[in-house]
Length: 401
Image 1 (tube, one colour):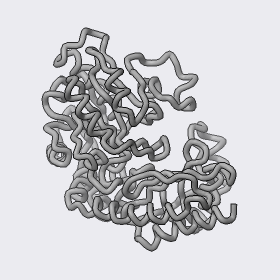
Image 2: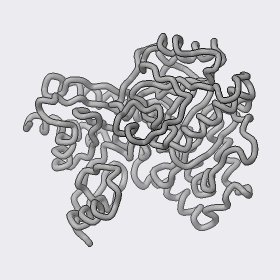
Image 3: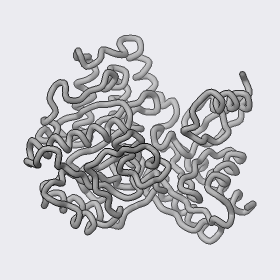
């Protein structure tokens, strides 16, 4: 098997169809560019759903991984290892939180936050056993585990997988009043994406996160911010919550925390929250492993410079200005913040997937969501010239359609 066609045929025949990839088979990648098995180059404008904020093969991250591979890759949490303390302290300092609970995938981190919030509700807030509820948002995306899809409003993620996990109240995203009305004495947390990525890069109204913070504080409820896609530089700040100077009680982090090398996730909170977890109550064999921690330390060092946050903010202005020029020329709406955009294509011209395939033919990789929307989230290392070129290719596709 050597050609794209052969590899795709076997992949489709021998793997479950839980994804619908574009027909490209990537062989190698550097920075913002990838190359397929035939040698054709493409500009990556998806970044592994923001897992590759710092680019493919970032030298600092690769060097850290290679050095750690020589020494130690796994101990399990049965023992300490020499990378763990620095990772936890560094991520704690970055988030301004006392403690870290490391896991592997984003979905695991969300599950961890849910468990911690319930435990906190029973042991600290005093909620009666089995009565805790968590307020979540319509059109949310936090992963695809059984518990998480129980409160999804996406039929593809939700339907056909019951019975569902109880304990969640779904309210309209962007409405602080809806949260206020849903809270009762048994509410332990509000779980919110500062920007809803999978839903189409939906940015809530100005002041929404500030009001959510206020409501949570007034009602002794944990504010949990899922910054798995929006955090770690993507929006032009370290965290999307920073745009409103909001500090949640719990950060959920993943994707870019692993630098595009290994799965790394974590939740960050103060001791009065994370201190409710005791030995044996939660864990993961690979969570916080030496290789993951070494990579995470490199990512934290990169973020501490502020370079990537500033770059995402500057290039984000270029991206959104250029996209706004396409309004009325096949684009009906543009949303986003920093180097992250959701672009609604006129359905009369084609679906998001059709536009994504046409972009692929022109050397740009993007991905559709919810029918006629495409998402753009290139690595923050992308050059301004390449960024403008990518949007020019979108303009050409729309003109052709």
